[in-house]
Amino acid sequence: MAKFIVIEKDSLDKITVEAERIFLSEASIVHTKMHREDVAEFLRDGNNLILKLKSGEVVVIENFFLNYENDVHSDLVFEEDGCVLYWFDGVSSFDRRWVQLTYNSVSHIYHDFFID
Image (tube, rainbow, N blue to C red; front, side, top):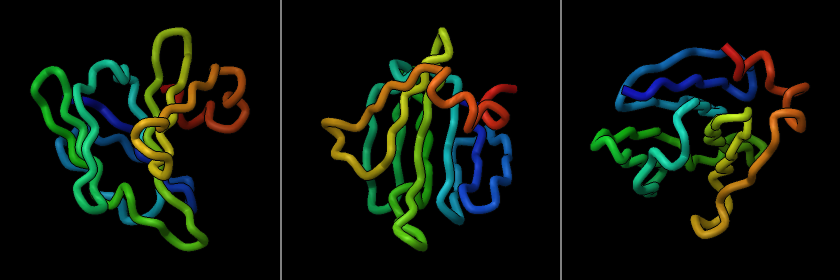
């Protein structure tokens, strides 16, 4: 089962989740050290993001596509080898969804949250 770190954007509260369903009650950053290539398919079902993994597992992130107060939305981040982060912002189209960031460009902001 994939492991996720969920960080609420407003409060910066952080929890670790190992589940097939992740429920977001507010805009959050959903981070995993799983590689994006581990995901066979990304699907949108209403406000939910569905990750169909190549292993056969399915992970549902409920309320991922909701826009919260002040048009704040959730993000999905994959951390790959060499501390490269792939950031899915939930707003861009699925065709242009990924922003690649090197570790150094975000380390000062999210280092304490992403590095266990």
